[in-house]
Length: 201
Image (cartoon, rainbow, N blue to C red):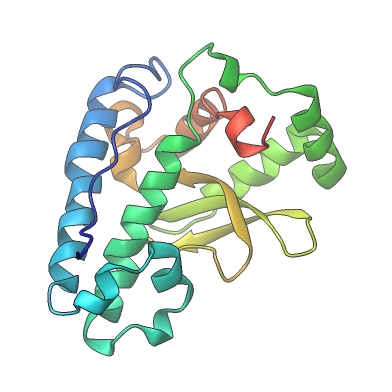
């Protein structure tokens, strides 16, 4: 049986990230933007049933193996689907257990970046430095070290390492509440990170 891609439900309510990320933005982001990526990915794969049973990580991690006719669509819409599915999972409702940085997590960030504040500054600067649309990432490299990087558009960072934290800095992720104030949106993002998910406790 062929497996078509579907929109995953959010693990919390649309208003769970208020006041940092507003309900209207979350609802539109999820049911309009993310659903759009899913629909366009499925449409692109209709003529390639052998690709429909492959995991997104497999397709996106080896785009050269994807037929040229749909390679760009898989990169853009498959990337958008994977990135957003990942993004929803690393957010935590305000004041929930997951949104508190544990001592284990703090130690890990300090080991790799000096201080938690240094990590936040570097991550913020990376997100602010993106020209146009894209993502800022915290990744784990093959040697186990953590690093901050970015990708344009809906590209994934699989060629650089395993993503463990990602921030959507497309304007659709924040414009209703923050307009052109991307820096304020990034500061708000730090309030709703699910640290237990990101740093595994």
